[in-house]
Structure formats: C-alpha cells, structure tokens
Length: 191
Image (cartoon, rainbow, N blue to C red; front, side, top):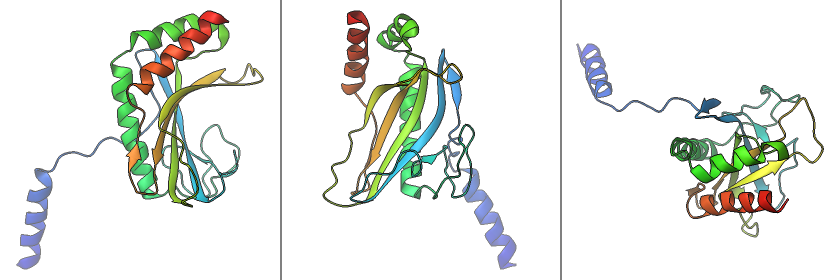
C-alpha cells in the first residue's frame, strides 16, 4: 500500500510544479537568428585552444560532432556552464523581443559591409580557471570573418556570458548592450 501512495504523492507534487523552460535551440525571431552556441572552458591558467578545445553546441557532449563542425567535442560542458548558457539564452530572447531600434538600424545599414542579423551564444566557463586568470566581461560584440567565405556567414553578433570562479553567471546587460550597438553604428558611419 505504501508504494502506490508514494507514487500518488509524487504525481500530485509534480502536477503543481512550474514547467521547465524548453531546451536551448537555434531560432529565428523578428528577422534575427540565433545560429548556435560555443563554450570556452578555462582550466588552470591557459586559454582554451581555438577551435579544438572550444565546445560546440547548446549542450556539448564529449565525442559528439555538432552541425557545422568537423571534429567531435573534446569534453562535455560543465553543468554550471550549461545553466549559465541557459540564463544567457533567456536574456538574449528578451533583448531580441524588445527589437532595439539601433540594432535594427545597424543590421540594415551594415548589410553591405558584412553585418548580419545572426547571433551566436558564447559562454566562458572560469569555474576551473586559476585565480590569476582575469575573466572576460559579459558583453555583446560583433565578430566579422577576416577573409570572406561565400559559403559561410560574414559574421555574427556574439552574446558572451561568463561563469566566474565564484559560480556567478554574468550575462550581457545595460548599458553595455546600447554602447556596443552605438559603437558599431559609429563604425559604419565612418567607413
């Protein structure tokens, strides 16, 4: 009799629980596209070797080759880094849903100069980094391909979050978001 009663209690408790967020995935909204994700696992004092030690995909798993990549991930992302990426993903969704006019202006004006409406989720994981390593700040910035490749996008907006050694996840926020977009607009106007 105890087993069915425990099962019923478990079901009743689960029924009132809030639903988990859907898993992270690529999306298109309002003309913007989130194309993928990357994790930079800092271990000790050394920066991860790009691209071989960068973990690719929204939920990187050791040995898995993510779409668009040629080599398998060398490791699985740490759970705290994935949780930070999920927090960052939600912040990006909110940012894009607000449809910032300056961002739209940069994308429209910069199309001929290689500015795309594509985003890439970047998560730095400093949870295993040496105390001497200075973490990168959480920020929005634009990465542009140095050598154009007609088969690949000209660039991406990098939405960069940072998981600190203290376990705190920092995601891009104001005023840096407005400053990054304004800086890119100034760059377009001077070139």
